[in-house]
Image (cartoon, rainbow over all chains, first blue to last red; front, side):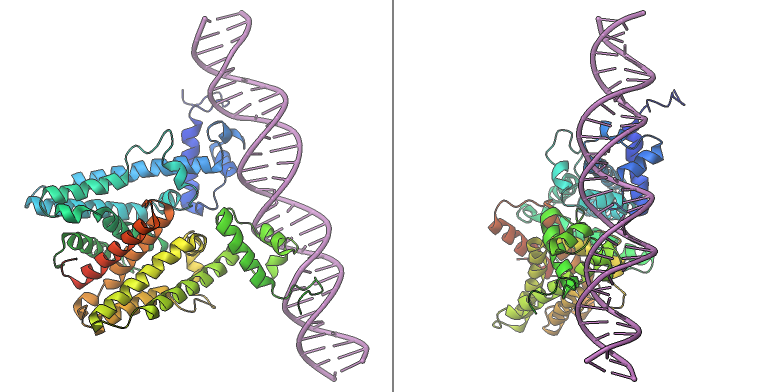
Length: 211
Length: 211
DNA sequence: GGATTTATGTTGACACTGTAAACTTAGGAC
DNA sequence: GTCCTAAGTTTACAGTGTCAACATAAATCC
């Protein structure tokens, strides 16, 4: 089962996706080539076409996996928030934790993030297709907002339109930091900035004075 | 001066940049090829190398021009805001106008915007180089914040860290709308969303209840 | 004004890419 | 055991980025 006959790879699709991610992490998504990935896996140049329609189909698959991974990270972060404090404080901490996970994912795995949100023509393929995303990060953020409402931290009236505001702040922070547009010298400085911006979002949504 | 001898083009650099922008607007930045641009201009395949070090150098030049164009749009929007009302209201309107111009630029010229913020390895070249950006959009946003302070709409204490918050909201809105992640059915709906999010930013920075 | 230098284009070449068509092989169904 | 089919292979072609060597027009110098 281990070293096979070398003709049938076993799980070439998986291997190609892994190799692609490694190469993209090193050289960037634009640089990525199907043939190089095939070479890494030790397979002929055109073998990928048995598993992906074309180059951008592979990238789309990678993007879909990325969305699932991001969602996982957000769920994990949400569940790891301390259960103490008032329900309002907990809901707020949950929202911040989810947002922080989003930003951290973008910074820890910029290659994946670029593939997910990078090229405009990849996105349309990801949404509304047969095998779409398992868990949608957007819905998780929306869930966090719902929890704010349940906890009484956010009024139902303000809930309307809150998604766009929250997501804009979170996504904007993530992309600006990833692109190096917002510069932070130290890791601590960056963490403080993220915390400050997310707190701004939480407070702003609530509609009271920020701390 | 018009139809030249056909050997020396006259302003090939300019012509290549223009052709590149047209092609990118139609096919996307990833698809763009130097040779195609050369063909459009009616020049040999390798002529571009007299004006640009390589493919990404041309894209970087396009990005730099994009930043200047964005800054122009922001300045124009700022100057076009009505001069009536209290100075605080005016400063606030100015901030919103600048942010709106940023978002509208991203949506009206997505191709340019992608080139500006798209590929990660382009950015580093844009900043900190000999012929850098004429006017920095980031500074214009910063100026708008300063005006808020002068007008008394924003306290000096809150001014610290306000750039990141404001820019995150504006840039996040722009990129999510551009990528089609935030979906709006009508143009009016989109305008309302932009207005709502920018108002959220302005109010949030001030630290009082949103409208 | 003529010669020379220099910027600007051109041609030819190379290695690499995406993608299609025709062929081969291994593993499972009957 | 035979046949079918999914999964790889080889071969081929048009495009691409980029380099080196060459050609031409414009600017500069005497």
